[in-house]
Length: 285
Image (cartoon, rainbow, N blue to C red; front, side, top):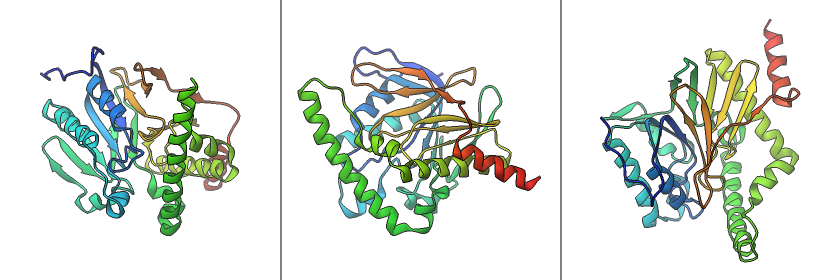
C-alpha cells in the first residue's frame, strides 16, 4: 500500500488514477518549478506520464541553469517513484537526447518515445509529445531553434510586464498566449498540429491522444477522437488528471489554491482542422 506523500503546507493531498504533465522545461528561467513542486506535493496517482520536454536539453547545452528549485522537482518525482507510482517518461524534442535510451526500464520508470494508455472507461489513448507532427520542428530545425529563442525573449518580457501588473494590483497575463490567439499564422499552426495528431489516432485506431509540445491546454472532440493537450509549466501551469471513472479533468494552477475544473470540450461548428480531417477521410472512401 502506498505511503502518504508529504503535502505542501496544510493543503489536502488528492489522489488520481493518472496524471499527465508535459513541457516543464527544467533548466530554463521560465520554468515555474515552485508551482510544479507544490502540485507534486499535493497530488498523487497510480500512474504518472511525463509527456516530453521535462528537461530542456537545448538550453542546458548553450547556457547551463539548474537552481535548487529545479533539483527539488526531480527529488519530488523520485519520491513518487519510491512510494509506488508508475512513471512513464515520453521523450520530447527538447529532451531528445534521451531518445537513444528509448524503451529502457528502471524499476517503475519507463522511457519511451510514445505510449498507449487505457483509461478506466476503456478508452485507448495515444500518449506522445507531438513534435513528430510539427512540420517546423521536424523539417526546419533552425527555424525551431530561432523560434525557441524568440519565445524565451517573449517570456522575459512577460515576467517584466507581470511584475508591474502585480505592483498595481492586476492579475498576471500571458503575452505569448495572447499572441498565439491573435496571430493568424499561430492559429493556423495550432489547427494543423491538432489535425495531424487526430489523423494519426485514426490511422492507429486510437480513441484519442494525449500530447504536449505547443504549450496550450485543450480538449477538443474531432468526431469520435478525443484530443487532449497537457499545456505546460512555463506559463499556464496545467496538467491532465484522470479519476477512477476514466473522466479527464484539467488542473489549472493558481498562486493561492488548487483549482481543478472539467476540460471544456470544443463542440462548436467544425473548425478548419475538423474540415481537413473530414476531407481526408472522405477522400479515402
